[in-house]
Image (tube, helix red, strand yellow):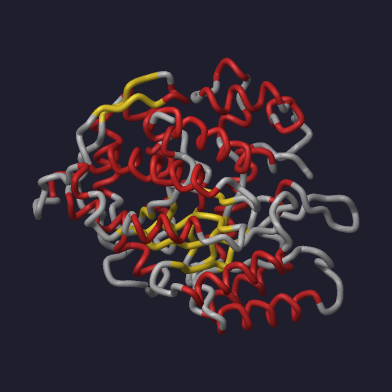
Length: 381
C-alpha cells in the first residue's frame, strides 16, 4: 500500500474512533503566566530544520495512543521509530473493558518501561451514589502507584452521561471537583477530551476535511448539526473553560487540541487564558494543515510561539485482533507523514484535504520540545 493510501486508511480509522462516540452511546520550560510568550522572531537557536533522514535518530514521544490488544505491535513500532508512547485508557464502550485496558497497559509498561507509558481513567457508573467518590479515589491511587502518568476524562462527560433527573452531567458539575483535586494532589496531569471536532456542528458542505464529511454523511445520528437538542460546541467549551479556571493548580492537557483545532488563533486564546494547560495534537493534524494551506506563516508562528505548550500525539489505536503487519505499516506511515509536515519543508499530498500541503519546517528547538521535551516535563519522564 502506498504511503499516501496508508495515511488515508488510518485517517479514516482514527476518524471512526474519534467521532463515533459523538453519539450518546510546573515544569521547566513551561511558559510563565506573567511572561509573554516568545515571538516567532525570538527563536534564534538552532533554527536549521530537520530532514526526513533525521526521523529515526531524534527522540520522540506520541502522547496519545490506545494499545487495546495484548499484542505488542505498537510497542515494537515505537522502538523501531525511536518513539515512546502514552497509551490512554478510556471509558468508551467500543474499547475493551476498563479492566482489560488496565491489564494491557500494566503488562506492556512492565515489558518495556522505557518506551511504553500509560494513563488511567475512571468509570462514571454510580456517579452521585454513596461510595462512588471513594471508589474512584482508591482506584486512582492504585493506578498511579502502578505507574500511570496521567488521568483521562472523556467526552461522555458532557455528551452522554445523565444524572437521576436526566440532565447532562457536565465537567464543571460540583461532584467532579473532588476528583479533579485528587488528581492534582497525586501530581499527575488530567487529560481532558471535551467535545468533538468543530466540523461535527457544521453542515456537510461547510466541513473542512473529507473524512469528517464522509463519516457524518453515513452516520447522521452522530452529526450534532442535526441534533440541536444536544449541547453546542460553544456550550461544551465554556464548561471546560470554567472547569480549568476553577482548578488553577491542576495541570490540564486538552486532548485533540482542546477541541479548538479549527482555528489556531482561538486555541492561542485558550492557552493565554490558562497557563496550567497544554494541548496535544492527536487526530487533528489535517485541521492544522487545512489552516496552513491558507496561511502557512500564521500556523508556523503559532507553533513557535506556543512551543512549550504543545504535545505531539496521533490517536493511533490498536484494536483487538488487528492485522499486526498492516497496523505497524500504517503507524509508521502516520508518524513519518506528521514528521514530514512539522519538521521539514517537503510537500506531500493529504487525501482527506484533497490537497498538497507544504511542511512547516519548524526550528529544531521547537521540534525537540513538541516531540519530546514537553512530554518529558508533563509526564515526569
